[in-house]
Amino acid sequence: MRYCDVQGNCGDVEGDWDGLEEDEVQLHDVGEFYMDSPDWFLKHSKLLRDLVKPISMINPDCSNEYRAHTALKLFCVGYWSQVFSPIMKKIGIPTVYIDLCSGSGLTKVTGSDKFLPGSPFVADAYGNIFDYVICVDNDPQYANVLTKRLSAVRKPDSFKVFCCDNQDAIGEIIEIVKSKRAMFFCFYDPHGFDGFSWNVLEKLASSLNGDLLLTWFEHGLWRNYPHNEIILNRVFGDDSWKGAKSSEELTTKFCVRLSSIRALIKPIEIVDESKTVYHQILCVKETPAGSPFLRAWDDLRGYLESEGARATEMWLDIAYEKQTQLFDPKFER
Image 1 (cartoon, helix red, strand yellow):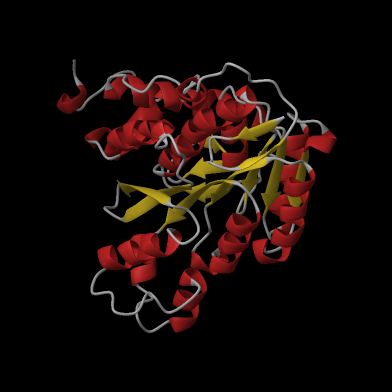
Image 2 (cartoon, rainbow, N blue to C red):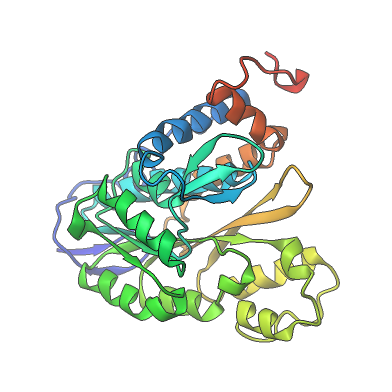
């Protein structure tokens, strides 16, 4: 059957979606986007709490460690998976989740005894199962433990963990997705800019159809400006970073650069507890219908750019039963 999918690409694939309206496909089962802010943050914090329980029982001494704001990145991954996967499944297209900097699959929250699930488990467990999962990490211990953790929740032939730099794995990743005639959702969350490469992004985006979600550390890259040309050229893929007068302008230049591989670039600015600015940037193709499914991302932006996002540690404390009630008047009913 001939189809034009929600990413605007045409081809032949098995499946029967006769009579399915375009808006019905694109907005099918995308979740609740209009909850009050406290309800929304508590709901998603509790989902992280529930997801982490079985993961943390496997090699519990092996984990990454980040501050509480890492939960906001996980919200983004889980939220967009909840939009992406049902759309593809509705029209019969296989889906692959790609995590280019996976870590161990378990994160300890700095300064606390709380743990969070890794992004591969959040993406695949918010009620939308991907047909295949691909993870990459260059740390042998992390890759080995992540394999064990994924084995506890997925069949052996439904995932692959690469233990190498993502630049060395990208060729095989592309071939796997092509062989499955699938659409991908890729999360690229580097451990610092040493793990970030424009060439990887460009190869993935030019070879396959799917959505990209990137973590962009605005202040981190600005600290390399303009003296570290090696890092800046690797991140941008060229010298289009030159001439930026501020960290904000550097971010704008990068978003313009991203528009060369995906037409729609949708950043969410997040300010963490230390006032550091970073972004979650969604990159998708424009559809003939005007990409109405992106309204979901705009709703997410409303939550994550609100005062509530600055209280992430409080939401986690309540969800993990470390705190019993809201203490900030801003969130009282």
